[in-house]
Length: 541
Image 1: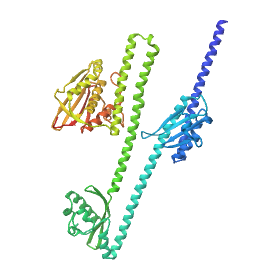
Image 2 (image 1 turned 45 degrees about the vertical axis):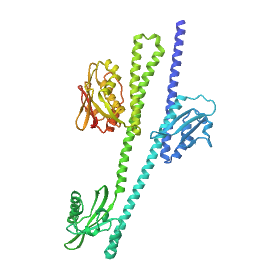
Image 3 (image 1 turned 90 degrees about the horizontal axis):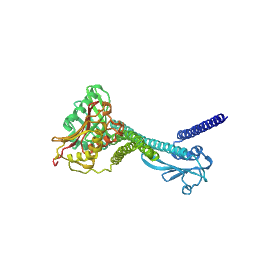
Image 4 (image 1 turned 90 degrees about the vertical axis):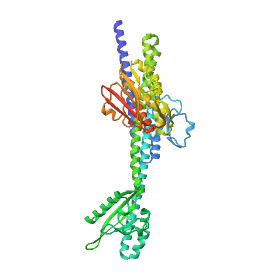
């Protein structure tokens, strides 16, 4: 009987735990559905409206409250710059207690905040709603950034369209002027005198017979002196060869040519065409328009698009480094710290020492990553100062060796500083230390126990070359191509599972180029790597 009673109680407990587990799964499923429905509804708003005010307003009134645990008791505030949107009329946000909030960030700039408040004292699922609010904030940030970019592109397209219209208008005016020139020589003379564009007529020998008055601005001489001369008499030889060849092609083919030319930093669009007066009497005519501003606008637009694309890729990789490489070490630290805190008396001293060693190593790696992140962020803002001075390179390397002495000894690495004690360079000390520190740390990371690292430096009449060589695991060609590009992202674990972000080498490239030098790597898998960088040689070194 007693066994039967125990068995029944066990069965009841089993069913109870199973029921609770199913309830939890069901609850999480419902929360996920709410979150997805909310994000989907927010997406529908962007399809329905192109105006951000409409999207913000409908979001706080309809989408956000519906996905909360208590829709009828929740107050949602979306503050963008100095404009506040809410699901309640005439709200004063300062009168409501902020239970949850998330920042709205566009292009790394905080432009607003999403805030949730509840009416009265309510016990709500804070973890779920916090996750939901952050998901909404991230989505709103992306929507805001996308719509703002679309508006900017539309604006640029409008400017470009207006420039094209202006160009077409000038062409029409030119055509009218040419037709009138055929009716009257006097009108033609006046046109040539006052024409805003460059007009020319040449004979079959490519000699100028008529030039508009404004040609004196290009030629630097009175128009009369240019009449009867060829291009070779007026312009540099190479430039003249191209122009004359185009002229010959027009006359031989009888076709109209339209070309673009660059001369002394300005861009011109030229149309050339043959003029047949009578049989065997042929002339070349044409007109040239200064399109420098339009060309610069086109080139600037292409450059801006390229920079924007690279900036977005760089930003995504940078955030990936922060989200992954910075978060994971803290998880390790928290895990080991909790283990020590909860089970300190049960862990033997040897194990305690091992855990503390892991915490120390993780802390050192995380600090190095943070330092690189901060330095990289400063360089991107352009706030870092460049202060080159005379430095003893041997002592700089010794300083880094001392910094990593514990790591070097732990892996029993033979470290050789072959730089002479009187070797000097002109460089920014802080930047140079960062370069050497990252290259040496990289070598330590990928060199196995009992390996070897050599640092050496050489000079010639133009450059100082520094080399960091290791007997490590080597780097594949594919990885070598991406080592110094943050937009690609490259990170590999060391020989003892040392973590890294790849940002250190990016910093090295930034700082080497700041000195006017170059950085590269030569490596073979299984045989080791040699990192080279140069800086221009200064006579006062």
